[in-house]
Image (cartoon, rainbow, N blue to C red; front, side, top):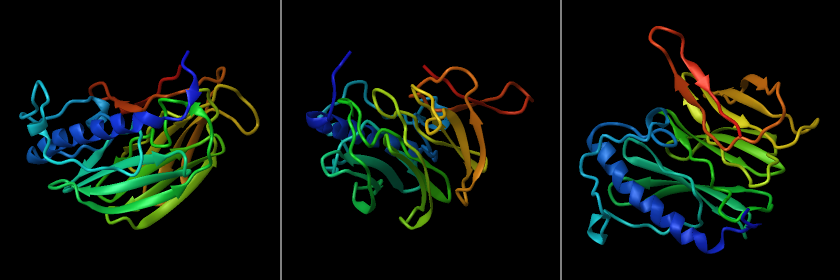
Length: 245
């Protein structure tokens, strides 16, 4: 098992990963498709772009932008804007940024003060990939003391912000929110169980942030680093699928 610690020198690797993916997102723009969540539409990881090279070279980058921190999260896309998070462990802050698809210009950024805590050295404040729809971008920040879920409009104006209990697990958080119909769904699971650490799946209204439902885990507590997906068989009602360790 790897020693827990700070991401440190891994920030540059995370930044390069973001910029490589941004080229894929440009292909999604040309195909008229949005990239709204972790791994794209319903988490399938399939892009309609037809110009992605098999082997990357410097000439394949459309642009590069230095971010204010690192993180393993992925960018999302709506229209002509890319939204991505980065984290600064030393300063105790998470940052949501909006960038121009065409040239990578930072259009705006929003900072969140986050409590410092130890996690796996490959983890970061910026673990969760944002989710986006035609109205808002949704960002999730989880620490061992507090979990923040917030919605902003595409110009950076705050719509709502909600606070939940912290996430208690050995390696730090790993789950990402998704938008399904008119709700935002995310997992809030822990390795242990207690009065202030009840594992659950939570849904809030995407327009107001008010809780729509909370499904507490009935079996033994488990940690979840996964992201929900939606499944439907034929004419059956869609189902939300969650997995845990």
